[in-house]
Image 1 (cartoon, rainbow, N blue to C red):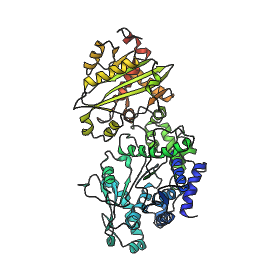
Image 2: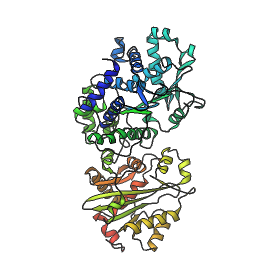
Image 3: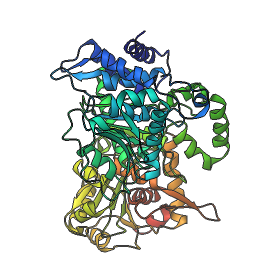
Image 4: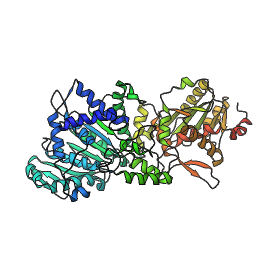
Length: 564
């Protein structure tokens, strides 16, 4: 079969179940087959797809047993599918490449960096671009040099390739002198990222990028190129406020477009959809409900299982992760490609994500309701949790406020997008607008009739006292282990048992993932965080709400005149 036929065969095998894959890979496969059946603006150039795959299999392995045997790269089905999609689809109007941004998410040891190195050399020498600037980009120079060094080593091992294209290998670059093209490693540590004109940007381990600087520079610097390409390959991580999770989330929305066209393929489609014909990607991970200890599903996160990923190695690490709780987050992210919270996590984020639903607060009007209010800082987030509860089931809605100045001054690049999408609300100025917060909280209380509004009396008392003077049932709950331990356990149990529903809010999700449960000598918990910038205001407001639903605290606030 030709490479294009093998790519189609891979897509068909994924959809038939012959190759076990998650819903995101199925969506990508179906998108390719749909477009082959008829696409208005794009066509499939089989010759271009054949060319890049032939090039890849002419390159040598640079590490491990295959390098010692001096073997050439042998592409697996998922790699052929990827390369054929990226380089085979072109615009009908001018024949230029369709896909401009690519996001791959796959577990460790699945030859990610090798594939990225091949793409780097192809863009440098074979893509027909004069003066091509190709960059292996990362936050640190050492990370950026991983892909660069592998590509350079491939070129050094292939004298015929160097001769055919006039390749020169220097200390810090691989160059094609007759086209004035070069491949270099580039990091955020460089003196400046200005003045770049990349034809290709290859970004390895995007989840490790603590800022969005490198990604934004690469994405916005391609205006002078006719068919630039940005390719990011990464494993899952824990920072849900970073650029990696943002790009991943966008790909999910692109793939949702295909899923929704086909009734979800039997899956629950989470979130909205977006049409973007220039964005391609694959996410190899487990589906909701999969047991990560079930060896049968490991191939979903490891498409190279049996090739560069070995069953016995995964089995050994899975046993350790099952026996040692502290080892589990690393195993889930690196080997099962599952996003988790911080290394010392409180919440099972997989369970939390499963509780997310497209619910409306009006649907719960009339349910018993309590509010929890966190006003710890005048210059940072304020949070209000509206917790509806009935027959042991819960529905949670959250409001988050932040001063407008903090959005522009914060290192968290997600704030601006969250504000645009109404996940957080900005108040004018450098500090929170107390009049606005009081007005909005009072309106919500008038609408949904909470039996209690819990707050921490150790911080700002202006709003609580004002609301109490207006007759609202304000209850002070001090953030002690005695008051917070049971609410945290109740909250967690509701999530793990599936009795919680929450209206999806990525800002609040991020805060939940930041919570670390600090256990005292008495076995009681209080919420804390690893870093100052890891906000937990939203969950703290929820703990306060749970505190006034718990039987243990009933007597505390019942005696203060609050309605039961």
